[in-house]
Image 1 (cartoon, each protein chain N blue to C red):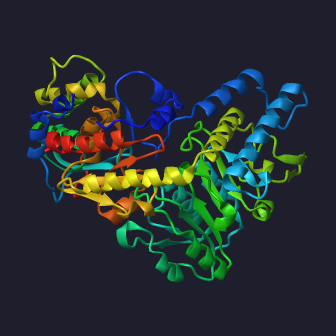
Image 2 (cartoon, chains in turn brown, purple; image 1 turned 90 degrees about the horizontal axis):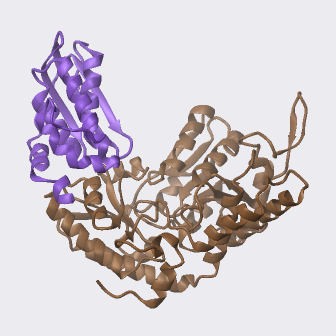
Length: 408
Length: 145
């Protein structure tokens, strides 16, 4: 095993699970859930021990402290996304909830015959809500197909995106191939027909701050547990004017101005979209995680991760009867690498790897249409985060060869 | 541990694929998916009263799932419904950590190491669940898979 740098050792110590003593752990399932950073964990404990109260309701001091902490987290999320205003940040239960919110709320403004454009590479979270909307409201779904290297064929946008298109909702980076979507032509095509653009950023946000203004998107969704924060919290960003125009998706306490037995007037965004008690401590933890991410040297991390990913790709390509999904140039993807071995099932492969301390996920990855397009039932996926190093890649390459030998 | 979990007996059973095939006009059919991994089994059988005359299955799954389907394909033809229920209960008990001394279908013992891997229990039990479902659905002449 190669020696890992002091810098990487120090970094891993900031993640409680990676810092613990015990058998070697090569955690390569970051696309599912990354490890939590100590700052997020400490912030949540601090909040629960010193400022636990409900938010945006009572006037007592604890409630005020909780509200301040919650609104601070909103500001931290806004800063991470370079949003114009913290009021454009809606806290949700995760990326899935954020995407469902848009489908419910923005979707309710669509008329029968309107079109939503998605792709065959979407996670089910960015597919099923739109299928539900289709069935509920009579909108038509159109699909961007796969092109070379299992990347989205954005050349097909001209054909897929017509005058009735109201929204193009695409992954910012695939949870299977890792392929990063070139957003500019998507926005250009959307603007040409007056449509909006939603990006599912669940995978991309884990690899550094996002600039929604530079992207010129209209909606952006991501989850906390993939960004070194806690589970149970996520973010929907949307342009302020869009949120203003959208009706609530879920109703309950804390999101109204006046209620009578006849009806209600709803609070302005973002409260309109945060019915009930929000995940306060989780938002506080996520805010700290995002702040920590914001302090990292992402250009340097990006170069290191691209080098590591390229090594992994090249190493896997040398394994007989192994196939890779997605672009072969690491610069075109986030560090997510999926592969399959002929005649071997991904769960069997991942089982063998797990017993060597390698945590990977196998299966369809909640992307069954993409599996169908790739012509496979499932794949094994190695997804790296900034705390992964050469030791992890080497262990994986050795483990894959061992799995092929054991399972043959 | 992998060497035990994926020992030669399991691999041989999966390779043998007892009962794999198609039955054009079976009496009862079942299709089950494992939502965890997307694996699928289609199983069809002919019944005479409470006796299974013939059984075929098409299984897309991991080694454990295919080995379990192979055991079903080997043992279920000729078995009576009560025996199927006993075998299914014994498999459940085995995976839950019980003794395997009284397994009606002795080949099921190969899954003893799987008991320590709860995430894989569904892989092993899918074919047996499909068999039980088909048996419970009972004769439905003319159905094909």
